[in-house]
Length: 104
Image 1 (cartoon, rainbow, N blue to C red):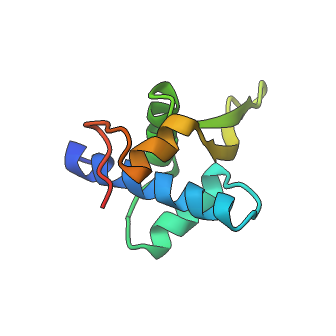
Image 2: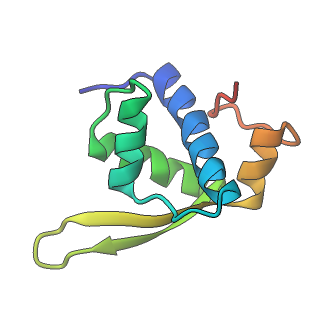
């Protein structure tokens, strides 16, 4: 499944909002599987690999941070403890912008 740039831009903003909501409620942080489920409930039809790609992009932009584990036997990767970085909060609050993130 190919996801175009416009959808990815929107999903980046939604992910930031979801992570912020978890933080504000002091709930457990998202991992890649629970984030995929949350996006699915919001009617985004995505695969886990696409969610991981977007998470890695957000990390490179210094908007979020997370822990990444890789199983050396299977090569399977897992992302956990996703949290918002100060720059990510700034983007959500309108104090900074990122052309690759759509915040409504």
